Image (cartoon, rainbow, N blue to C red; front, top):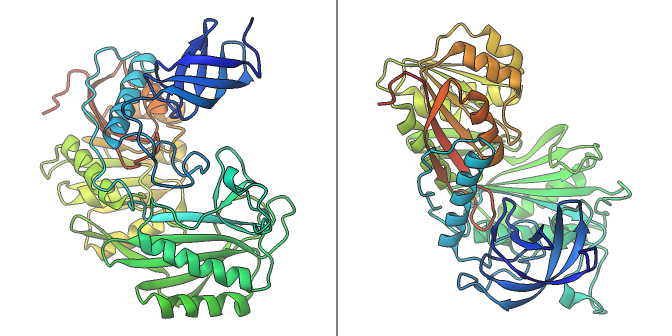
Length: 467
């Protein structure tokens, strides 16, 4: 019988696909099975059927992988925060490294690129310095909670079920953030529930409480609590700010971001400082960075330090080089490299990030960095610097073709490409392969229990030295 939606299949999982799903074959078709691991024999039901592939939901594991473990989190398999808690961590790093290799080979058509073993995260749990929790007027229940009469389904403060915008699990604790974050979340939850003011409906777009964003910094073991609401009501948010700072003295900042946008993005159109100062101060190496509520900062601080060490090693700066840093964000990589370069110029599209970069330079006494705000497709044309080294750290979507063309015209001897997406990294390396030789790629895991992986690629212009 031909494979179709609803079919029950017994499958042998061959490998993992990027996205964390197990890959099997049936009727000469590829079948992706979520939560299945290589080497496992499983029973699964087809839930989506396309021309050349299908997706199936795991029903039974008849022969488990020796690398399968008991997930410590009760929400594992239901929450979108992590996908791989049931997989032993060393194997996670191995599979992610393999994804980088396969992307370079199949997408980048780079047969002989050297991909080094992935660098594991120092912390496997409690590593995230930022968590966003959504409010909802409808709670999505776990299977064991269905049918219980004592379950209040009219409120949730937590994380989304994967692939949905309206299914929110009420999360008591997330193991990816430091434990004190879960204590803070509990206090906020009880305050919101007892406030008498409705939470935001993800379908109706009515209600007040929208998001709770928690940020932690290792440097001072401090916390920022960002309460995102649909309108300004100091009578509701100020008592919560006082309660939090009384209970947790190391909360150094409480802010209220306000947004009327229907988009499910925890980003305010305006911000009110309720307690403390409007930023945290985080450290990477000997440098200190201001992090405001809406600033971008790598979510794994220890991992970021390791990542930047790899970037610095690949740049191989001696003190005389001019560096061009594309997609520089708040200037963290620019500042990290500035002490070993003669000049660093950073390009960034987001004006607030450029403002943060300038402030971070002042804080660290850096005077050889400057930043240009604007779409890099156009601002790159304005750069008068002839770079010895170019650092590229694009968004997940990778680089625009116009940017690639301009980079090739500038012809820097050395490029260090930083990526959070192996597929788009491989595509961009393919576009540069006629001019640049990939010397090696170093995966750096900053996101344990997810399929995401950072990679740093060293590219040398053909004919240029790499030492």
